[in-house]
Image 1 (cartoon, rainbow, N blue to C red):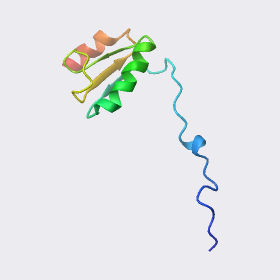
Image 2 (cartoon, rainbow, N blue to C red):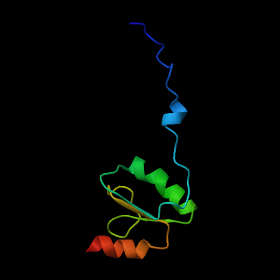
Image 3 (cartoon, rainbow, N blue to C red):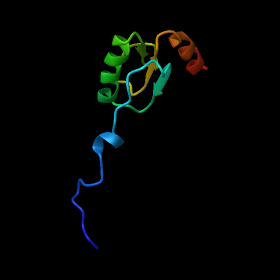
Image 4 (cartoon, rainbow, N blue to C red):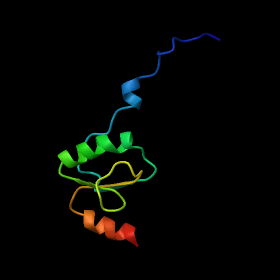
Length: 83
């Protein structure tokens, strides 16, 4: 058996390409996240016009849960998750 170099045949950018920031996702609910998971996403979502809130309606990234929306359906998502 012949060994190949470790990086031969694997294109990092082909397999780990980040998703483009588009309006394709209208809502996202994250559970069991850490502050370092949520904080960057909060900045990106809010700069794009979306909204973030924690499970109590506040704005804390330290609770482990987060609700991200495009801003148009945030109240509806909160009501849906409250039931």
